Image (cartoon, rainbow, N blue to C red; front, side):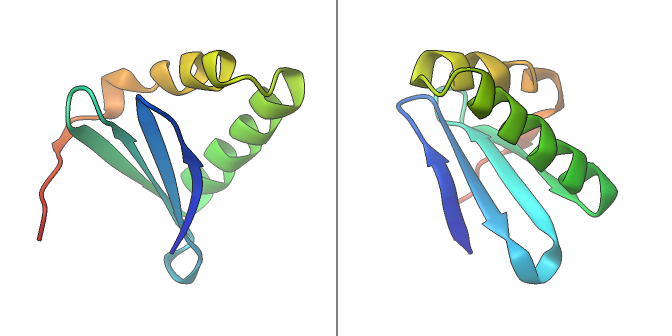
Length: 77
C-alpha cells in the first residue's frame, strides 16, 4: 500500500499487489476502488493531470471529476 496523493480533500492509495487504486473524498467520507484496466487508465489520467499542473487545486479538481463513482462509504476497521 502506497499513499500517492494526500490533500485536505482527497487521498489516493495504490495497492500494487492488487493492481488497484483507492480514491477517497475526505469531505463526504466516500470512496471507490479501481482495479485492473480501469486502475491503469486512472493512474495514466492522474499522471497527465499532475504533469499539466501539479498544484493541489488542480489535482483536487481532477479527482473531483470522479465524485459520481465515489459511492462506497468510508469504513474504519
